[in-house]
Image (cartoon, rainbow, N blue to C red; front, side):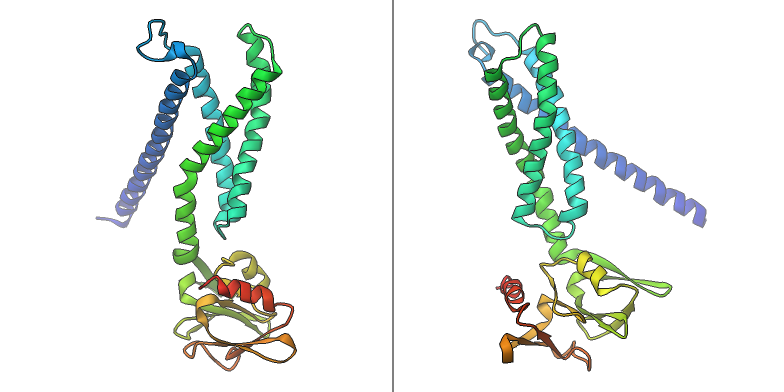
Length: 281
């Protein structure tokens, strides 16, 4: 088989897989939304209980729930993409998760208000503050539960990825080396060149700056010890208290070289460093 044909097959399989995953993901979302809308609208009033003598299928409420749920789904989807790119891909924290949820609810409020003011007169009613408030609170409560449940596994997967399996592309000249976080012992700077040190002691020159790396890497795993080094939490062998409230950090023997055998932590960074290190235990 020619290289061109092989590339076409790979591309075709990739497109097919993407379409399949996309279709399944959105089919899953729509199924949850439909079931959720059916349950909510059948439980809201006695007349909507299946089996009652006056039962009428709540078409208006059902379609309104589908429409509002779709809008909420898009809001949550794009907000999650934003938080994933800016925050979750680097570090998963409770504070950030709460901010994601609260910001999603804020966007829902901003969308809910004009929808209520527009649709209420169209349905023959008049805006009423009491019903507006009750409807908004119910919408926010149900949205918070639905968004939390739906994205819980995504956030957990990102957490595992950020801790164990995340990779960083180390560019050095014309070459690029992919290293997992778990295989990096530290980064250090010497003569304005930044080096990446692997767990076996192998050193690779990089085109990074330490400031750039500090913004890029997961700070649950890495700590900027001083102006010269960023250290991985698993590469630390021993911590010793020294004069003036400083710390002396010794790295594991396989990692040590003439530049990074011992690391000084200033008294100003001592508490943040120990707080970071103690999370390991």
